[in-house]
Image 1 (cartoon, rainbow, N blue to C red):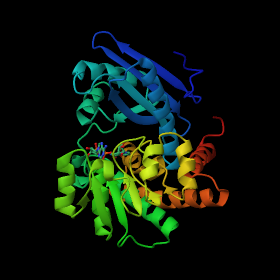
Image 2: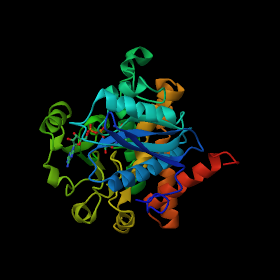
Image 3: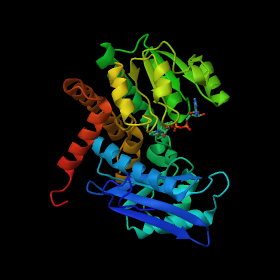
Image 4: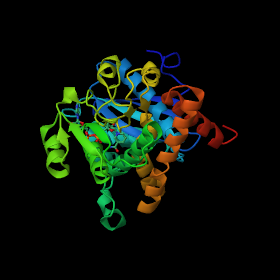
Length: 356
Ligand code: NAD
């Protein structure tokens, strides 16, 4: 298993293979770029079928974090960690203590946070061994209880603003009154997005594989519920993926009727070519890591310190960033996904120290 010649190797600064025999920890930490600041990115726990799968995932995710933070103009680099293991079976305090030791050994070049398969309890275990952890404190204790404790509300607010920008650009609408939106997944982010949309007068339909979640959206927000397999084909103006990645693929594109895709899910494009296909079909795609940056903005301010008002103001910059992406994509005739990457690289190059 090579690293330097790996197809997903993108000049990553450091890749650390972590093994602790006593706890059974097997993990990889990838630091992609620290020119703008410490590499902040979540620690994922997943039962990878092979070490190669874990390496591929961590290399890609780490690079994605560099782009996401650079585009959001945060003083952060990009990194990620993956633990090979089943989060429902293999979690022990010793495992996360060992992981905390490895994170600490990097001296702050990598800062960890929760990701799929990990949460506040695991961050608290790691925080017993290292300071380089975000999300280890119950944040409802912050600011006299005015902050919620997880970054999802900031993510949802940013997605709402980005979605509004996309509707304005593609459909020429100044508000969302009567605009129909299909939300896939009404978990932490999707539900909060639905709430913003309903408050703005949009008509919302939702799907979720977890029945209580759709029920809550129906009961509390009056959302129309559709079966998970029917969400793509809804006659709506906006499709908002807020569940899992890879959902924009040749099969779903055949069913998709919405002229706008704007949602929170990470890695929505199953492959880069899908971005061009969406453009060809006249569908405006709000690049995932541009529109869903509210969460990393929130986490960043937890680290560097800042008020709820500062966080909100920073999240509100997501709208203008998307506007820039949409306008450039149109002017240059290239997919929005390509422009987002270019803009992220430009912001990285402009803000990186000259000696780097
Ligand atoms: P979550 O787990 O709270 O919610 C996801 C929801 O999707 C769940 O209700 C789940 O039942 C549902 N779901 C799963 N498979 C589905 C399917 N096939 N069809 C319909 N629904 C399905 O997660 P979340 O925190 O709300 O995050 C949602 C997405 O946004 C994820 O892709 C996540 O990576 C991304 N994201 C989240 C944040 C954040 O701050 N939470 C930040 C950036 C990106």
